[in-house]
Length: 119
Length: 297
Image (cartoon, rainbow over all chains, first blue to last red):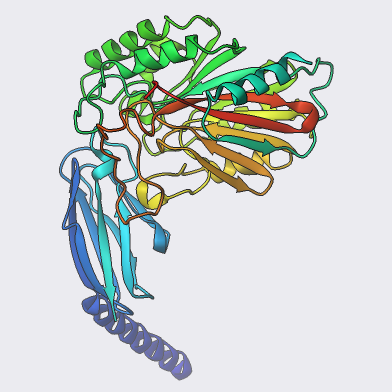
């Protein structure tokens, strides 16, 4: 019985530690909110640090949009009325183009931006 | 001297075409039970009827008619003509979309050759899942056989996310299953099936699945549009050839960070615009592609 209590106590402490660690990890994540509307992203020029985790949060002000960052093989749909999230850690420096990949109208081809990753 | 050699020699001697590109095949067996005979067809693409932008094309209302006249003036009658998408420039107004598609259809009814095949581009079809386009032109994907060559038209634009989709991929799988692995196959599509430049939306989301279905077939050639310029690429043994536009050219893939059109050059009007003739040379296992200007400079 005593052994069982000890095991339960240990498990509880471990869970609490994991929750605390997880909360700290989340607290460290940088969140960047991006709004898509025909035919632009705002912001369209995003600066990130190599090795720094980031959450990109997308909303659309009008129709279904897409966000595609081909160099990192990342993409998401951005449906109206929802928040779309992409979590990633840039692993290289440089300037990387992103684009709307759901056709949204006449100037869809102009709907792009760049992520600049610095050391 | 055969008619095909006459035609080729004529094109060279008359200097009618631009650069001639020969696309080799692995060696054609021809389709079982069909007569193999060389022939000639014409590809036009990205006419964008309804586009307004004088800095890019001050003759947007007249370029398509000039292309029709240029095709009609070819000295050799093609067996058929294919338009590989973006017949019209997109509009949010469904009535205007139908009006532009109908106007396009009326103008190209001036082609002397009545055997004309059509495909949608994202400007025609992506805002209404191809509804208006299908009303005027019929099914957006299909196949047909012509003189021993199997042609498959793949729709990668009616879905705004640039997907071919499971239903169409299943159709393609079944369509190809009837063919010998050596049969000559030509694919028409609008967007590139491979990842030419995803940063510029020059790709098909599930294009790799179509290529995987085509890969077991030894003689496959793809003709597409979308990128408004001539481009040649191989995925394994499969050749992909994009066509010029008939409204404005775009810059070469990856030549600068952002995709951009090439402005109109008043000193060289219609530069970069054109259409192509494709001649099968099945005995030599090749297609000879001749680029034609839209209008004489």
